[in-house]
Image (spheres, rainbow, N blue to C red):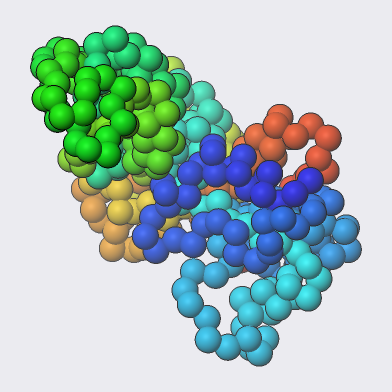
Length: 365
Ligand SMILES: [Zn+2]
């Protein structure tokens, strides 16, 4: 299979546009037309994972964390990052990362944690802003349905659990076809008045190109009049963290025991146990302390995340119980999510999870 087939599938599921500014998700090493025999999935792309790939004849590693975040100036194998990159290139192994774009989608890293905790229908804790746009296009009445359908088919008009959302205003359009025009309506040299509908739809910006193509292809006019607006609305389907309710409230002790078992962790760092029971739970796989305020605001009794620093634990202020389960531990099931997704789509493709435990943090009991 060509590498592009796999990466296109992954980017359709978790578009690269949803990654954070500091991130480097996407194809890091390799060519899109490269033929892939077998693939390995890992959280981190370490030298041990590269060695495993070489030994098992895998020429693609799909990792959650990108091996490279910033520009590199030297490649002399002085750091593990340089060694991973040079070894991958030398052995023709493609490196692909699917990081914060997978964190930020509804069916990504956090949904995986919610599933393990049995939390149904969780919502995004901090929905992204600046993602939604609005299109209004002026169409002759006779073709309004055709253009609307094309826009819907291209992904416009989805709001939460509703699809095919649009607003339509009828009015009169005017135009004067000049000498070189080829009007589908009216005649050259005569001002035309046409019964038109203004169709308004919203869409997430990564779909803009295909939505505009659908608009142009379905529209009868030679010149299409349309407006695009950037919206300040948040987009509830994309963003960091998730929040939802346990099916039954648990005491802090029972909750911690439940969390330990479901996430298969050996230790949990937590703030003072709350006296009230825990039912509403916020989660953020990986480093999530930046979401503590939102978790409190969302009424969560507990916040499951990782990488909290000493002083950040004080910010819980007995309003919420922070449960830091470890970065690797919070994201470990992300590997299973990727495996399942890819196997469902390409059942005959050889892909598996690395046998390496790439967690750099060890615990001594
Ligand atoms: Zn992470």
